[in-house]
Image (cartoon, rainbow, N blue to C red; front, side):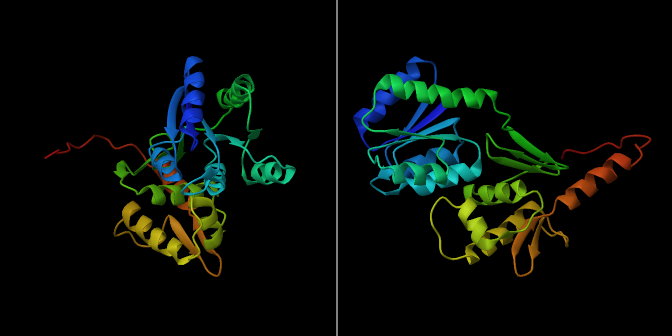
Amino acid sequence: MQVLIIEGNQNLRSLLGWHLQQVGHQIQQAATLQQAWNHLLRGQPNLVVMDPDLKDGNGLELCQWLYNQRQSLILVISAKDTAQDVVSTLRLGADDYLRKPFGMQEFLARAEALLRRCRSSTIPLSLQYGTLAIDLVQRRVNYEGRYIDLTPQEFSLLYVLVQSEGSPLSRSELLHRAWPDAIDNPRTIDTHVLSLRKKIAPGREQPSLIQTVRNVGYRFNLEMLNQGESEAEAAPAPASTPAVSLS
């Protein structure tokens, strides 16, 4: 299992990593939000252990973003020990909360309990809709047989839209679910949607895979993909396969 430890205290970070390695887990470490974000852009681990109190920002925003991605479980470790701190953190998406200071055996027991949930979960490694395939591990997209080069933010936006399964999402909701940092300008979504449309289906006329819903925001056009898949299944097989030049 892969574990990312986000902790500003180097000694504690190294100690947690060493103990998790001893029981067979692969470890990545980050001291800041920026370092954590760099790791997450390359792929999301099974478990994120994090202290939200970091020198370059509020880690709770990252916690909420991870929850919206639904790929990693989250164990928050924190010196804040009031009931309100615990409740608010769990409501933002953390799966467990461990107060500092804590014993290493308790930490390992809580981490292992969460990782057992990963082993028994049915979280998919990829999503397939007709000719659109989304690799959630490598964070790559293949559409109609070709890989689409997306930025990390474009990938997150597409993933959130696909998760909605055709339901419209407002610009504010897309910002909240797809962006790891607080952004106040909903028009940021318009810019990224335009870029996604150009990359996924350049030169194609409407309908688009990402539809504009007037006075609401955007939705993912599942019907278009499902229709294309049905037509492909219904089409008769050709009598012979023509030669294709690779030059």
